[in-house]
Image (tube, rainbow, N blue to C red; front, top):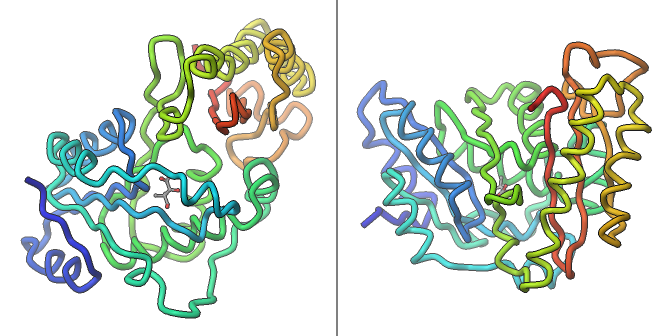
Length: 285
Ligand code: PAF
């Protein structure tokens, strides 16, 4: 069985026992693990001498109390999956181990965190970046692994380590999908049969933008319209269906980057009460 570390002191002792010079790979998660997380651990195992995961449902990044409380907690199954995927240890702190009473300092995202998830979930990215920085400082990994599914989060984490001189290499890992294109997410467990049948609409909308782009379309509003048309046919109004420049995570400037294939289609939608998000690079496929 995998070693379970419950406190920052246990984590520090485990970290101190690693062989000098051993490369540590770190996979931060909120649990309810699936094959997407597994692929992050497998990548870390391939590239590093030791692999640490964390499972912490971070209260700071939830803007809705109810969403935090309903977030699935499946510790034993998570530990089994982490062990089977090759992790050596998992840090499973309680909130009181992570945040001292009254802790008020936050890491704030820059302009790239203002729109999309940042606009729809006030405080979300400050919560994510604050906990990611704390976990990186405690684990002191050489490499940390993040899924591309949460593209805006990944972008902001990269800015965090670059702007605050955090000595870690961020390793992005491709989104893992079901056969019908639905991106794996811990939230998929909440979809009932009808919602599960509707959920691939996000992928279909993104594919519509990719197809338009492949046919030469370079006007962001036209690419976005293509996505919205797919949603409309399914009777769904997305939270957003947008095109961003991969270099800034902002709306592309006229023509800039388009021919270099540096644009990304991103979307989020509520399907049967569950909020899902996904993205595809427009150069893909
Ligand atoms: O992507 C997640 O699961 C979370 O946002 C993270 C990075 C573990 C921070 O809580």
